Amino acid sequence: METSPHILVIDDEREIREPLVKYLAKNGLRASMAASAAEARKDLKTSAIDLVVLDIMMPGEDGLSLCRHLRETSEIPVILLTAMAEDTDRVVGLEIGADDYVTKPFNPRELLARIRAVLRRAGAVPRPREDMETKRLRFVGWTLDVDRRELAGADGVAVPLSTAEFRLLTAFLQRPHIVLSREQLLDLTSGRAAQVFDRSIDNQVSRLRRKIEADHRNPELIKTVWGGGYMFTADVEEETV
Amino acid sequence: METSPHILVIDDEREIREPLVKYLAKNGLRASMAASAAEARKDLKTSAIDLVVLDIMMPGEDGLSLCRHLRETSEIPVILLTAMAEDTDRVVGLEIGADDYVTKPFNPRELLARIRAVLRRAGAVPRPREDMETKRLRFVGWTLDVDRRELAGADGVAVPLSTAEFRLLTAFLQRPHIVLSREQLLDLTSGRAAQVFDRSIDNQVSRLRRKIEADHRNPELIKTVWGGGYMFTADVEEETV
DNA sequence: CGCGTCTGGCACACTTTGTTACAACTTTCG
DNA sequence: CGAAAGTTGTAACAAAGTGTGCCAGACGCG
Image (tube, rainbow over all chains, first blue to last red; front, side):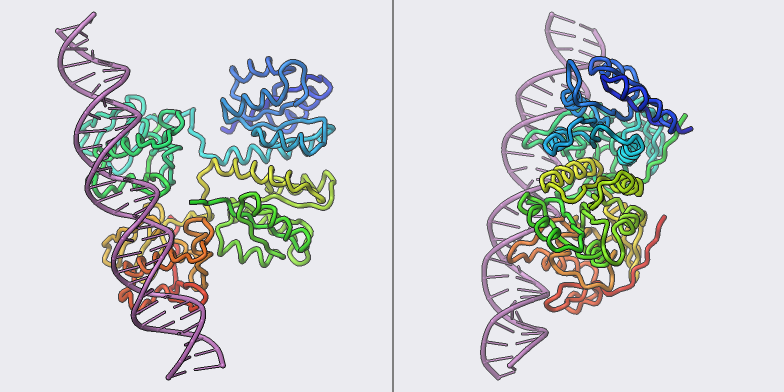
């Protein structure tokens, strides 16, 4: 069952906000609205918003500020509404991380097309599935029980994993056959940014290899991509319980 | 090691094309140009293009047609250049899958900001350069498993490949029977521009030949094209799993 | 044949990665 | 509360991968 994307329209002018939400709903999108940045922040906390349409000029906290905050704390795409058609404003908007902008007055059909375009791009990203009902991940005989945080070999014998090892393995298993940089892996496992000479991922990979590779000197599962990062090379089978 | 994104500008008007490429290069991007859709298709085959800036109105095959083709066969982002500022044209462009558009005459700085914005979004995704669902490439007994980064001989024995060797071989296998210049190979394998006396590709070819040629003194698979580059001469069979 | 240019291969320098050791920190358990 | 065990990041060194300089030989052209 496909649930339609949830759009949040943030604009202080009711004459803009309400018709727009109606129009979007009529075209198969779920749409909510907020009349201020403060109101929007509440909605963002309590709803699973997929995309934000955001007016720049608003009393109180303005759109650019909220946009910046969104960019820092989430990956929710933002389309800016701007009254001015000046180049500098457009550029500033894009530079602080908005995904697109539309100048007022706008053609609703064009805005809809842009929303769909941005959603399409965002959807293309292999996003970590938060609605993971998957409980077990299998690969070449191994079984990782995500709920119990347990890894069992083909013979059924459990191999204890530390927290970091479990997170690293999970990150790999959710994204097999693609190269993951150290920075990405660090982000996925601990959510922190890399130091200048950060070798912690190397170390964790080394430790994980000892536990899951037949010969940790000739790794088959976690391959090194010189100058690129690491890649999990086995097929992964998901088992939802 | 600088690996700046590689932009392809496609426009039939030299007065647009050339200054734009210069401007992009001045701002830290690698830029190539094509004067027609046909020329562009060639470049797209032999270079690792990260983003396309595409004029809609061109003699011969027009921009929309090429854009549609790009969207069907790859995930390379497209920014459209359009002479008209009419809503319908914008919408059509976005609906067939362009990532953004700019109306002529355009402000170079704005276009640059849009290019950066689109690249940032695309860059978040580990980009599959080709629409490669292909998992195995076979040639005269050899089998390259692209997902596992493994090369196996006719006898099934695996030959270890380094990252650069793997990338080089993949570049060849995806473009057999075509002469590839050193510059193109460098672009395809490491995404960087060539130095003045760059011999790294020669070196990698030499190393690769030792691994896959029966007699690396008389290469049969990777032939040297004097003054031109290298050419992979065997037939390649793709196996999609 | 002679000349300049291009290519193959080697050696070496440099970068990146694997591994070990160790210190700092957390958790467990008495 | 404190000791013991386990976990994790940093540093250091060894090993592997990669690029550059060089030279001899191959090639194209007169």
